[in-house]
Length: 355
Image (cartoon, rainbow, N blue to C red; front, side, top):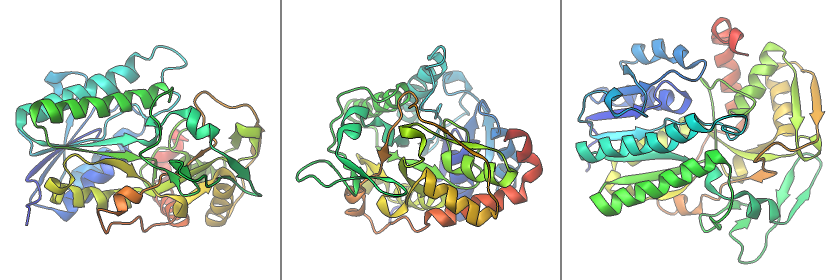
C-alpha cells in the first residue's frame, strides 16, 4: 500500500484552503512534516498562524513569486493553494499582482517540484470555463433560483458543467491565470515527467474563510448576519437568484488526503471537484439559511446591474471524479453555514475588525 508523504509543502498555507488542509493533514498524519508558506498578503491570514503552530505545522513567510523565498527542501509533495482568488482582481487597476502570483508563482512552485522530484497537487478553479457558453446555455427561473435545462448531448446540464465544456473564450483574468497554470503543469508532466494532479474547485466554504464581496460568498453572508451588517443582491436583476455549488472545506481535505496517500492513481488527474447540484444554493436561499442559523435578519439592498465576469449559474458535474473514487461531499450547505457561524462566535473579537 502506498505510503503517505513524509514531507509536504503547502503554499498559501496561511490562507483559507491551505490553512485548513495543513491542520487537517498534520492532525491525521502526525509523523509527516507539514510546512506552510505564505506572504500574508490577504487580510486575516495572520489569524491562522497561532492555529497552525498549535497543530504542529511549521510556517515560513515567503512569496511564491520569488524562488529565493521558498523554505529549504526537498519536500516529497507540494500542495499549491496560493493564489489571488478574486474573480474581480486586476480590473480596477494593474493586473500585475494577479498575474505574477497566479501564473509566475505556479511556475516557481513547479520548478521546486522538478528540482525536488516531488509530487505536485494543484488547486485550480471552476472559473477556467469560459463565460459565454455558461451564460448561453438554456435556463429557467423559479421562485428562489435560476436552473439550467437539460439539452441532449450538451456538456452543461441541470447537474452542472462537465470537463468537456468548450475552453475557448474569455473567462476573467483570474480564470485565465489558473487555466494557463493548468497548461504549464501539463508541459511539466510531458517535458520532465512531473507527477501532478489538478482539482478544479468551485466555491469552497467553511470556518477560517475571511469572506469578502469578491471572494468567499458563503462566509461573507454568514459573517454579515452574525455581526448585523448589510448585504446586497448584485446583478441579474438584483433578485438574488444566482446559483453556485458549495464544497465544505473538510470534504475537500478528505479528498486531498486520499489523493496524497495514493498519488500514483491520481497522477495526470484533471477534473471538477465541487458540491454539485445536491450542495448548491442561490443567494436568496443562502439568506434564508443564514437567518435560520443566526436567528437574525440584516438589511438587504438590490443592485440590478451585473459586475465584470459575473455568472448566472455554476454547478460542477463531478461524474468523472465519482467514477474513480468512493469519495463524496458529505456536508450540506446548512451544515457549512452552521460551522461558519459557530466559528465566528468563537472568534468574534478577532473577526470584528475584518467585517
